[in-house]
Image (cartoon, rainbow over all chains, first blue to last red):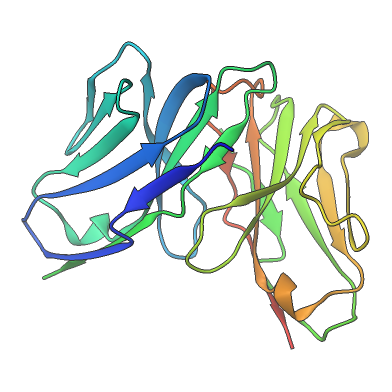
Length: 113
Length: 115
């Protein structure tokens, strides 16, 4: 069964600090992995997509990594801001005709002043 | 471009009543999804449409949930009768092709509370 596990479940950091969120998956065959940011009361918004051949991709202060051998991804946030407070959801897509998406339960990040 | 529109934003009903949610996807997007998101969890797919045909409804509780996408554009999701465990946020999303390499664009959801 395809699964996506995220850790930690929740995280509190001070403004300006860095943090790293983890995503482990068992989805097969693998197509790509997306990180979404979900603000409270809003729908998820795509931050970045990682394909099999990509190890690192940056989007501003967000940097995603992918290790396809160990089936792990991380999302690193640099110099956190109050607006980074949100849930971060890892979604892995399989490479079948159906292109199914498996969602993690997210990591809730709280950035405090 | 305009985003995915959903209504209503909030709905409170008593158990055993019925409720309907509406979704207008991004113009031109062939694929439309309905998700149920329980507090503290990731979205769970209820049904996926490709144009006006159903691609996946394997996790839709068909004894009480129904969905349609007439003319391949707008969609409605209905619950009848509602149970306490249906309290959740119902998210609609659309993508251009339904292939995994295209992002899903989500609406802000309808928050349903069952009393």
